[in-house]
Length: 475
Image (cartoon, rainbow, N blue to C red; front, side, top):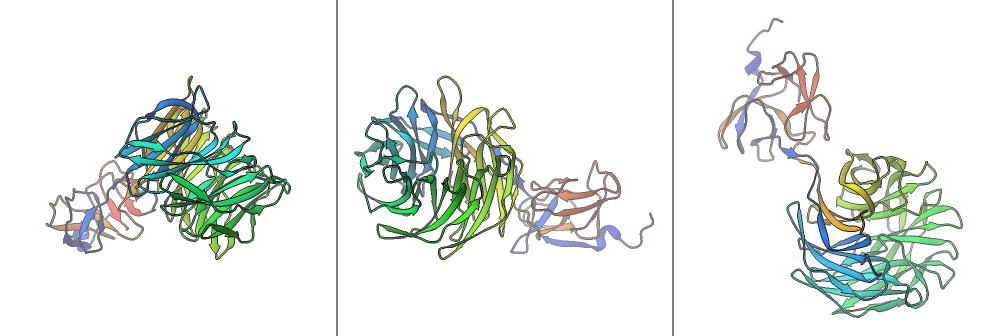
């Protein structure tokens, strides 16, 4: 190959280094005009932390807003009482305070964090005519204490195993349930916490009689929620927007999101107008599936469902949690891999979903899985199926990078200290500081600054190799 001109230098630029630049490493331009190496980390799972008691039903986890703490709650292994403990997240590690026992019969319970010092447990009391009850917890450091149970429904109630309540504010929540004493209608009710007590408004019906099961809810704001449930009479699954005013709630028009009954589903809002539903799609071989919904007022439009698990989802619901307005994670029992606990990250573009590679968070059979987000770290509470069953929690840290589809400019031509004027091989130059390349192969910048033959997310082309050490930079 014959070259004309100073090919290695003519396309170079010089810029001030922000941080140390390593010879031959991928470089981005920052918003202030300085340059830095591409840096990032892969998704990772921390070390599992055992809860301070054995139990079953999974370890439900609820973040305490504005803190690095969460509350874990689950039934005991030898009785049906409840146990709670405060968990603290430090980096990728979790530690627990002491367990507090609540002497009542807990079934289909869930816990909601309202503030840095308050949480609420909601449950069906099978020892008291299946009444729906709530109890307020108060947190001090890593200790927790509970008030007295309050009945929100005197008739028989049926609660979904996952996500049947959501925080509206530091003192208010919405919960949904099936009122089996009133023709199995689906209802929602607003609860308000004062001190160690909770009071409720009047329950409002959103689902028809003799057909409404497994209702779940997530909040867009302190006045608006999304509710999903199973309409067994019409063999379909529905979603509806609820609007809260004081202690009352009203509803828009329901839409169908799945044409075959879905018992195992979960919902979470991503912004003030978008939500994601994850579910077992019985109309498509019971595959694990997710769909994006958008609201305008009380109207809902749905995107196209996208499979995240091309196999039968287990008979346990997935748990979906927001990372930010365009990213979420789904935890589920992986029937493709020995029923291990698995997690997958989804990214939203409009109403489309793309997925990262599935991550195993426990190499044991995992039954119920619950998720929450503590700061930017996902906490997964689960039931490791042993004897007795082991309640555990573990952290998941999403992949991160400073690389975007627009900020890659080339490769450092030398080693430079921070604040030095650095030479960068940019588009159409030849970077001669590589190794192990295959001539004729296109390479892509990876999220951690290395280059590889497979595009990462975001997809950024590094260039084409012309020898084992040389790359024509494309950018």
